[in-house]
Image 1 (spheres, rainbow, N blue to C red):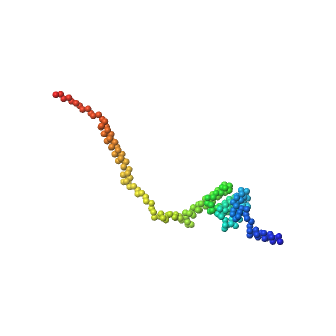
Image 2 (cartoon, one colour):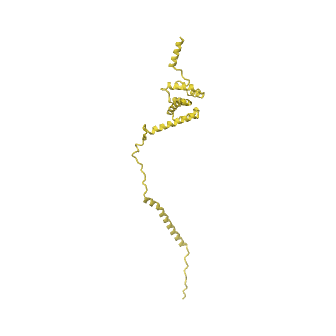
Image 3 (cartoon, rainbow, N blue to C red):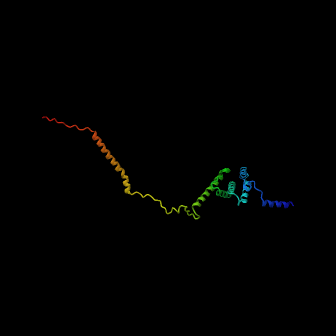
Length: 205
């Protein structure tokens, strides 16, 4: 009789699993997750987050999924044997939140460098996908087709004669100014200079 009850309890437990302490009303309890992380309850936290991720895959919100991937990415990066799993969670995290950082989880510098490398590779792939197709051919920009027939009007280059005329204008202006100044100076000098005395010859009758 007791064995039958045990079997029934196991079946009920499988069919209706107890709600994780990290889940509240079907949503992720981010405060409980953070508290468990700060208390170094890493193994329990990994199991609870992965269970929540698997059970709520169809209904999980992007925010909850991003938080789960962020914590699991850091937790699996601790062990060098699970770096590939950590990279998978970090890549999913970047798809949901491209500008995210992990400083608030206080990971060691080795994990921060690991995440930054993954983030750099992710951004490079995104930029490549925006500018090139699957075969590596450049993707034309939306405005390229409309502006293809338009050519920018350029100013015609000056001819040698135009350059010569333009560069010689200052010579004519300078020469004219010198001539005019000399004429004015000569006129002023002629007006201010004393009139030469005339030799008077007495004529005797």
